[in-house]
Each structure stands twice: as C-alpha cells, then as structure tokens.
Length: 364
Image (cartoon, rainbow, N blue to C red; front, top):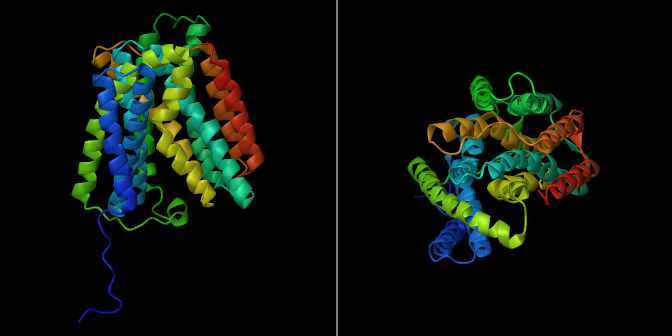
C-alpha cells in the first residue's frame, strides 16, 4: 500500500524544457537553412544570433540539472565557464576570418555590457520593486578587486604600446605572457570558487529545484549544445560582415554591442530575474562573474589558441578608447557596490554611462 506521504516522482522534462529544446532545434535548423541557402546577410545573422542564445540557454539548463551532484561551488564555476562557450566559438571563427577588431571589441564589450548595462538593469528592476537591496560587501569587494586586477593585466599591453615603452613592438610576446599570468591567476582562485556556496551566503539565498535529469542526460545535452554551438557560431560569423554592411555599423560597434550582448544574453536575463526576486547578492555575483571569466579565461585562451591554431593572432593591444572605457566600467562597479547595497538610481546611472560609451563607437 502506497503511503499518503510518499514523494511524487518528478517528470524528467517539464514544459520549459520542451520550449527550450523545441525553440532551440527550430532556431538551429533555420540558421542552417539561412547559411547554406544564402539568405540575406541580416536575416542569416539574426537567426544565427537567436540560435546561439537558445543554445546558451540549453547549456545553462544542463548545468543546473547537474545540481548539487558536484557541489554548488563547482556547479557555479561550471555554469560560468560553459556559459561563455558560444562566445569562445564565435571569437575563434572571427579570428579565422581575420576579424581581430571584432573580437577585441567583443571582449571589452562583454565586460562593459555586464558591468554597466546588465548590472544597471538589475539594480533598476530590483530597486523599483524592493527598494535598496543588500549585497555582501565583503564578497563584493573581493570580486570587484579581483576584476580590477584581471582587467589591469588584460589591458596593460595596450598601455605599453600607446606610451611607446621599450616593450612596444613586442605586443605578441607580452600578450602571451599576460595570458599565461591570467590563466595562472584563475587556477589559483579556482579552489576558493569551488568551495564557494558550501556554507551560508549565496547557496542559502537561492532555492534550487531538485535535479530532474540523470547525470548522463545532462552531460549528453551539454555535449550536444557544444557541438551545435560550434556550427552555429561559424554561421554567425559568416553572416556578420554582410549584416554590418547592410546596417551600416562599424566593425567596432558590431563587436562591442551586438556580438557581446548576443553571446551573453541568457546569463544577463537570469541576473535580472534574480534581482527581481530580491536575490540581489546572487544576481550581483552571477553578473560580475561573467566578465571576470572573460578577463581571466576567455581572453587569454583566445590569445594562446589563435597562435596554436594558426589563425590571425590576437594580441591584448586594444584601442585607447576601449581601454579607458573598461577601466571606468570596473571602477564604477567597485565604487557602487563597495557599500554593500544597490538602488535604482545607481542602476539608471550605469545604464546611462553604457549608452554614452556604446553610442561613441557607432562610427568606429
């Protein structure tokens, strides 16, 4: 006889799973048709961007379904790392096609979009709905300082070039050194990240659903999303140049705004949703962890991989305006969050700064 208090078994797939899988499948098929049937560049680009976004959603959902099997800290690191997988593929294919300017702008643009636009929207949404929201000031200060250190190391080759120091002319070698240092810094901070959430704090603030997918299914979905992301990223880059010509936007603006936002769309939406649910501390950590991963992992990995794969070499020598913009963005994030709380006025200010910076690159 079945007990009245016996737990009800959850279905493996729920409605939202079918929506993501169905919409993702349709988007990938349409993006493939647009690429191989040579539809107009703008249409092909939009379809590929939608497909990339939905595949990123599938990656995030798969990692969530791994749940606490690997521990909340490890799951968070895995989610951040794999969340940048589509952007990694997009940047690699862009480097293969020689679009170094797009890749450099996309790396800086991803940092700017998260620290200014997405954090600003999260602060506005959360602030208007719940008033001032609390952020763990100690954790915020630690993450913000690490973000500042990572960005300094990431853009310092640019300063040596602009200031005409003796290191000027050796940008490729200096970029490789900086990349190695950044990856080493990531490795040193990884153990602390893996332990994060095993006690109170972020894990205690966010209520996760029990995993519904078996480990094998979750890993299989991750593998499928990764393979499809590689193909779709190639189509995305192939349609990028025709789309830029059609819309009349510069290469820098395309990388700084369009590619950067498309590559991080799902993480951005999740961060805003968390702020709306008054889970402000977790929202802040999720939003700022993405640009931190870009500075510590994605950018240095692209520097090394571009040389190893024989693509157009990526160096960490950015345009002066990009360097100034990213420094200001990090400093603003540190100043605004160091007091341990956020409000909608601070959020609106961040959005305003992002609009001004993005607009200044419309012409190149």
